[in-house]
Amino acid sequence: MTDNIDTSAGPERAQLAALRARPHAEVLIIGGGINGIGTFRDLALQGVDVVLIERNDWSSGASAASSHMIHGGIRYLENGEFRLVKESVGERNGLLRIAPHYVKPLPTTIPIFSTFSGITTAPLRFLTHKQGRPKERGAALIKIGLSIYDSFSRGGGVVPRHRFVGRRRSLAALPKLNPDVKYTATYYDGSLVNPERLALDVLLDGIAAGGEKARAVNYTEAIGTADGKVRVRDNVSGDEFDISADVVVNATGPWTDLTNQALGAPTQFMGGTKGSHIVVDNPELLRACAGRELFFEHKDGRIVLVYPLHGKVIIGTTDLDQDMTKPVEITEDEIDYFFDLVRDVFPTIPVDRSQIVFRFVGVRPLPRHDDTQPGFVSRDYRIVDSPIPGLGATKVLSLVGGKWTTFRALGEQLSNAVLERLGRPRRFSTAGVPIGGGLDYPTTKAGKAQWVARHAASVGSERGHVLLNRYGTKAKDLIVAIGTDDAPLASLPEYSRGEIGYVARTEHVVHLIDVITRRTTIAFRGLITGAAARELADVVAGELGWDEDRKAQELQQAQAELQARHGVTIAVDAA
Ligand SMILES: Cc1cc2nc3c(=O)[nH]c(=O)nc-3n(C[C@H](O)[C@H](O)[C@H](O)COP(=O)(O)OP(=O)(O)OC[C@H]3O[C@@H](n4cnc5c(N)ncnc54)[C@H](O)[C@@H]3O)c2cc1C
Image (spheres, rainbow, N blue to C red):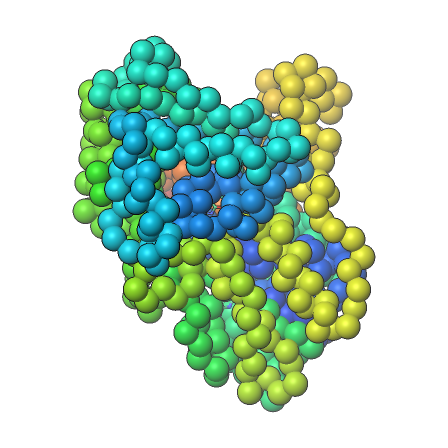
């Protein structure tokens, strides 16, 4: 083992140094997706000494691949998952209140092409172990589902109830919709406008709450066991060291079985399915959506979506069995499938490959499902005791499943299981506790203007609104920190050197790609170019002390990852 850690490079590596100096905690959580992060925050708030490690960047697994919906999961009703839907609707309502900067009301429209179809087969599918191809869901069935859905929201009072309209009014509101439509049903869910930043806010809240007792390090991987401890590797330096804990939580999502295997006790809990999305720059399609998500049944009976976000349109998704030992990739067939589904709902709007600005893919951490079709596998989660002989008396819990929407409730339940094993009481619930820049976030136009006048005078009103929108009320700290250093980047004028420098310094940035894809929406919105990557690399290098070699390596790595994971080509050689 070597000992060559550069602790000057931002708070993230300082956290690594703190972990190496005291490699013990009451609880070690492995996996920094939203569920590991949510559990970390909950435990930190209870005063538990907790460590979280993530082998890549925060929220770079399934948590970066979602359809960006904070939703009750209306379609899970036909699977009979009433508990999950009820909990999800409650969590959706809660997140609209505690994270209003990143979870916004999302009008969702279902175009319907028949009246009674599916009314008998949907309940039957639930009773017959979810077999067979779903029959088209008609208006009557959807009406029943939405009424149940609304009833779960009763008392929540956060979003309006659903409404049904006939063909004429549907086409008046959405003129480009397929004219065969008979009705549309519109209801509200939540739009997760920036998943990676919301997860980061949850993480930073946990660290702030726990201080020295809440340590979180990305790019650090659990690779095995040694003398009753978990062996980990710092994926930046390659150094290995051991961490001991009273309880270990395996929250590695779709990799849960592989992690248990690496720790020496293989399990067969998981049966993840792959889902892909593309993001297109198509102004006509964007206008046709009229600010709503279109959520509908494709020819094969699967529920798919066309969803406007950040001035672009997300099209998704697929649901295909995935072997986690193999690469997770988007295929050309999936892309053809996406174009096909757009043609079904907006038949006159042309879509093609030249409009794709970003692609993303991930694996849902679903339970093993043997004979059940992927679309009908339970989306509910469970917590399983999964002892690891190599860890001696350490208790080990594996998380199986868990959606984005339910991360707070899941974190609380997983944390309860941990507290029970530690013999410690819960201090309080995280329900209702604001998250990060959602604290005191103004949701009205007048409230925003007031906030900007009060906290953003130094950067001007227009820029103040941009920063409030981007960081929530945490923009206040950023504005103070950047002072007058807010000159726009030449290649990305809506970002400034001061802003990117602040992000690099304070938000656990380890690699350039973290900034391009997860701390900002630069790549998602198709704004990344070779020149922009070079300019961002200059700023980050200045903050993190990278030399020219490291900067060149980071540019190459960002280029390769953008190409392989997101189908985005940039030229990074010096201009
Ligand atoms: C296509 C798709 C669409 C979805 N749409 C929605 C949606 O609209 N709404 C919704 O609520 N949910 C949605 N989901 C589900 C949701 O995104 C996931 O269930 C959730 O993000 C899972 O979070 P997680 O923390 O459990 O797993 P992950 O986010 O995968 O986190 C696990 C982490 O563990 C890390 N890891 C693995 N092995 C190790 C190791 N040995 N050491 C350290 N770290 C390790 C990984 O790098 C990863 O970051 C969707 C999922 C997919 C794939």
